[in-house]
Image (tube, rainbow, N blue to C red; front, side, top):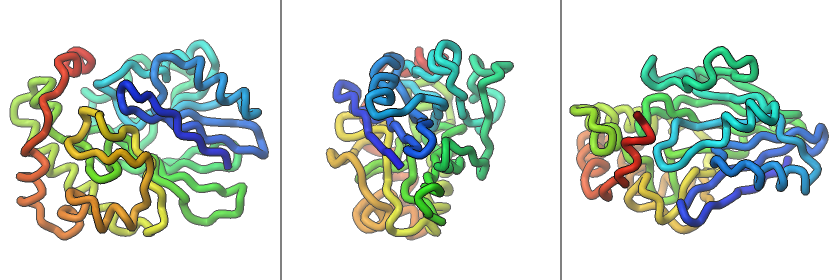
Length: 256
């Protein structure tokens, strides 16, 4: 399995290129609008981009998923969760779009990606458990966690209210995030956490500058995750909603 994290330092954003070296197929996860760099990186390493996947609908940048699907023939894997207000409208009726529910899987070559509903930052948010079946693995190596779990922090659940103006959405989203974090209790300690953002992003308040982590480390030293796993719901809701940075003004425009 080939895995490469692709940073955009201006936005503290990470996309991920994952390729099957046996078949030459690859997927790009959470790409930005400038897709040429992903296509070039794939070609340089002997891959063709056959798939693109999104963890959620982004407010901080324009996604390249539509261009990769409509102009380059990639199959798009997108969340079908979150209800009617949180769907990928551009992909409806597109023959190259596949909509995923919690527990659904797809393969890129001999690599399996499993969608896991991790709502809270946004209602439709999914993460992906990655298993290198072609390498003989029988359990996941990594969680592509999007804006769910970061290194040292978790995704902020206040943006629907603080940025998009949906009054009363903040606390229910925090409780939804709490439940999603609690559901990670069964994930193995060794699973790598591959987040969509690092330090400097407005999608959390205490993101670490280290680009990746592992589940066991985050359970010990990620305060928000630790609080959720300890079952302290009221303390978690209070703490996660306090001290969040002011969201950039353009976030609201991106969601409307």
